Length: 145
Image (cartoon, rainbow, N blue to C red; front, side, top):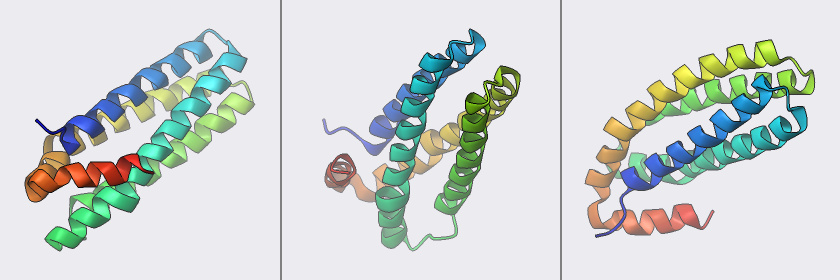
């Protein structure tokens, strides 16, 4: 059986969640050098994930369905919110401000959980349904980025 959009992107969410938790634990322990490295890995993974969605997955879905003001628009807005929080967290890391970082981390965790649930339970299954067997070629395009 072919891997689905839902499986692939849900796995990416899980991977990002693990890296996020590792970075948070390192900040809590004030292991700043390691936290910097782990946060960079997390930030890069998130940006790669967002880019795959915003440049390939969402536009292809919108083109196929004609839905440009629906769930993909909401997801893009939430991506921007996440990016803003990540930028603030990066500043906290640079300033070695663990309290502010951990506060932002809680906010980000709630946002990511809500965001991921919407994608995993609604949007990705819709995309799988719309593309069916063609989802495999869409995944190939995503992996090539």
